[in-house]
Image (cartoon, rainbow, N blue to C red; front, side):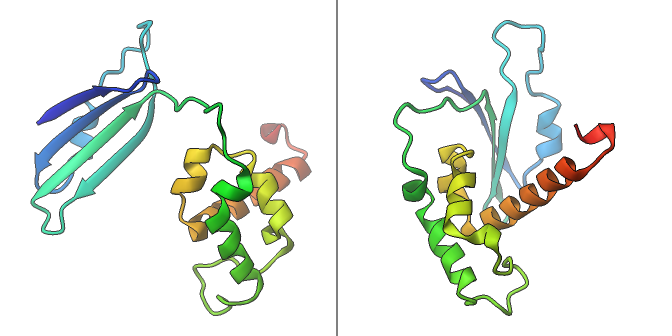
Length: 155
């Protein structure tokens, strides 16, 4: 079964329901890729859901960028779960867990709020706090490395 949904903000979702495990690669070649069309929307997200028994898959392709909301929540409100988790990390509650970043100045509330302000609200509220902090740490490493780099490829 193939479904096409047009959202009020202009985005388009194409949903494919298939038997068995997700066959993402076989579906990608059938997606609309007409770059020269005036109504072309870039692929912004792909999501795959497979039933526990692997008998059914739902594959969704979202085209177009999510529009900025005029009623953006305060970063401390929308990122509350992330800030709570970071506080626990800073207190040493996950000292023996390799999946969690170590306490650091980067995980102080002010630093996280500053980073949250740069992120789309949908990313903040949908992110797992542990994964968010890992990605924030990676972003910080890459961005600080490129600031310190003297080669022309990083500027």
